Length: 467
Image 1 (tube, helix red, strand yellow):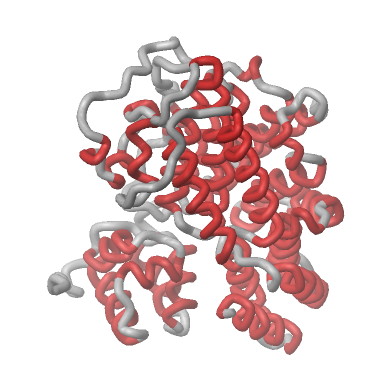
Image 2: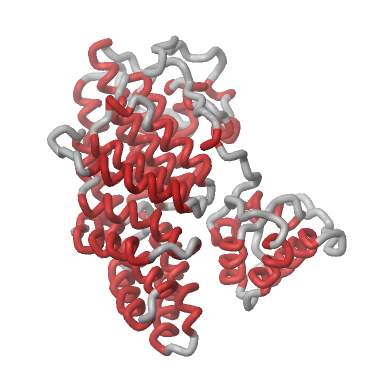
């Protein structure tokens, strides 16, 4: 039986009034649970509950999304300035605003690759490790891969080999390749999500199986690669806790295998996920951890990680550091040589680099009044360069370009044309990230209510996202 919700006191403070207003609308539109509303606006249910109680800050972007989902007519957005805008700096949409880690040295775990410390698993049963407690730990190497198995596997027994052979390693690699292709073409939802879930279970089950010593590094590397692609797919489907576990499993396996390239790729995705869900400070820390011993990385990998830094600074609306990080990413990419890159870095080509850096510049253009032309040109290169194998990347770049033109350009009709092109691609996907970008485009189109074409675009977006 659910516990009764805390009685609110709207007269106690402006925050308490805002929280009471949010609860009133949540009850009116469903009623929705905290978790259900959080899912609809891409934050945790606990954050919604804390905002209602007046113990957490609501960002302006979140207020806008709440207004859209709850159909308040803009009540929360208008109230936001009076409640939070004058007295508090904008914060990430997390339960608390951590101190800026960019201002202090990054603490890196000693052991595995860094220091070659002991890899002996901690004592105790893996069953004693709670998933949420694990996600809250600050060090990735606090738990060894063998102890992570239960986090991604069910209690029911599965048929597993009695010893690892090259065949099992080949199977893990093949699974990773299939999921990578399917995820890029269709997004992380639907059948792709089910395939990814089963694959990571299988890969995790192989870790404690007896393995000849010469094969152990290759097994760890193959599971790390699988964890990366599965985590990326789960991230795209907004299964964020699952994605974090998969990424951390990948990081642990990469560390133990001594695989610097896989380690860099894992930290890049971890950074992108945290930036996407509203915690650019943590994302920046992940990106900078990935750049540890950058001399061991290829130029393409360095460009990828500097791009993640740029996107973090962009979300912070830090113009100088964003432009500096974009410049560092460009400088690294100029020396990119596909021959030197691992096979899984083939995706990071000219189109991907320009699309990723454009995202950082987009935030400056929309939120910091920076020249939108730089972001627009990079998005155009990305859209032209992405083929059907990377339909999701193309659709996301198309959508962001349409949003940029709609928000900062002088021709909203051109933005409408771009938006419909994006919808042609997004309609074939099962991507929560692509859907969220469409919602953002709809909000920008809402500024042009007198334009019939913009209203038509918003209606098509609503139908596509609902579907």
